[in-house]
Structures are given as structure tokens and as C-alpha cells.
Length: 304
Image (cartoon, rainbow, N blue to C red):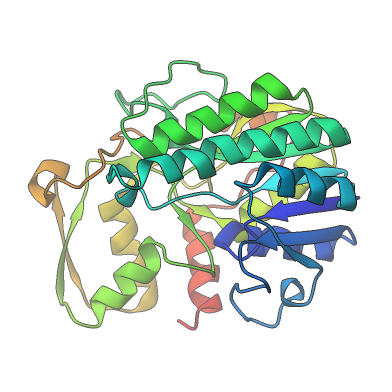
């Protein structure tokens, strides 16, 4: 199987490429820069085939897919700076990357008769209530520009293709780029007390574990919408911070505060990011390990 991976220099793309290599598949990474610019950890991705690709260039996307002739496309590339997306100057670019470029890739996948995985987000929902969101729920009501752009990407894929997996994730962490864990550890170097919100509820997703699931999906034809986060129960950002400091051996006092008490951010966040994974189990996919175990492995990976 030959797989084109967009956003190969990012947290998830990095791990998807390594997982493909581990299973003996041919992975071709792509990103904006002329050469692979992700974390240089000596893993296979750093030397695997790579092409520079601007996914917002329709002609370039179709040309690349025609030349590569992939059996599948794993679309990890995205604008993920949620607050920056609210800036009116950025909004057109956010839509171009998350929605329009996704449509280009879906069209190219259809032309190539390739499977496609599109990585989406809990932000397509309004975050109300306490019931976990089901993957086939269509009660969309994104609260921010980022969520609306990702929903538009979902619709572009589902309306264009039959052989697709739309996989919504939340609270992502991996080796490349920034994430909540890295932010907390960095703040612990200069603060002995931190305020963290405790009324936004969800579950973290470790890209290393998610990559395994995504390649599992590519080996099947069990298409459709899925939710994928680590197991271990639903928690708040406060709970996550406390466990990060406990496992990292950091003596930091964490004070729980409401979103309102913490202070308004540029983009509204969903309070309920609980995602139901029952469909994964029903279709025979192995669930991800607990987030607590994932955190232990990740801290070891980054030197804690």
C-alpha cells in the first residue's frame, strides 16, 4: 500500500509516517517546506520519501496525486491555531487550508480511486450538555472559525467520496510542535502555582497511539465517521495538568477555575468535548490505551 500523508512535519503526520514504515507500507510525506522540517528524532520519517506540497494549490495537489498514484491519502495538514483563526485577517486563510484545500484533496482522491482519512475535531459541535457526542451525530454548531472550517472540510470529503474515514480527535499531543503538556512543563519552570480551567471536559489523544489506529483503518473498508481519543475516562484540563505534574515529579500547585474566571479567549471553546468511541469497538478496531498510560510514555519520550 502506498500512502500520501499531508502535514508530515506535524505531530500526527510524523507518527503516521513512522507507523506506515513499521508495517512495511510505502509512505510519502508532504508539507510546505522544500525538505522535511519535523522533529529530527532519528526515526524513519526523517529519511522517508518527501515532497513539498502547497495543498491550497489545486493544480499542484492534482499533479502530485497523479504522479504518486497513492492507494490512500491521510490528510493531517491543517490550520490549528484556534485563537489566531478568529482574526479577520486570518479567517480566509483558515478556510482555504482547512476547507478548500481539503476539497482539492478529496477531488484528487476520487480521481485516483484512493481511500482518504480526514482528521477532524470535537470543535464541529457546540459543546453543550454532558452526553458524549456520537460520530454519526449531525447536530453541528461550531463555536468558532476553526470549528466551522473543519466542518466544511468534513462535508467536502463526505460529499465527494465513498471511501473515506472522517476521524474526530481532541486535546492532541505528540512530539512535533506545541501542546498542553509542553506548555504546562514550560510554565512549571517559572511558576509554582498555576490556574487551569476545570469546566471543559474531554479526553487527550496521543498521536503515537492514534497513528496506529489510522493505519488499522486503512487496512479495512469500514468507512465512515469515527471518534478517536485515548481511553481512561473523561477529565478536565485541571485534571490533566495535575496528572502531568504528578508523573513529571513537578511540585506545582494547580488551582481549578471556571472558563469565565480564567478569562475570555479570542475563540470560544466547547465545554463538552466528550467523544463516544463505541463505534470503533463495534467495527472491530482496537481502542487506544488509557491517557494516563499515554502520558507516561510521552513524558519518557521527551526526557522526563
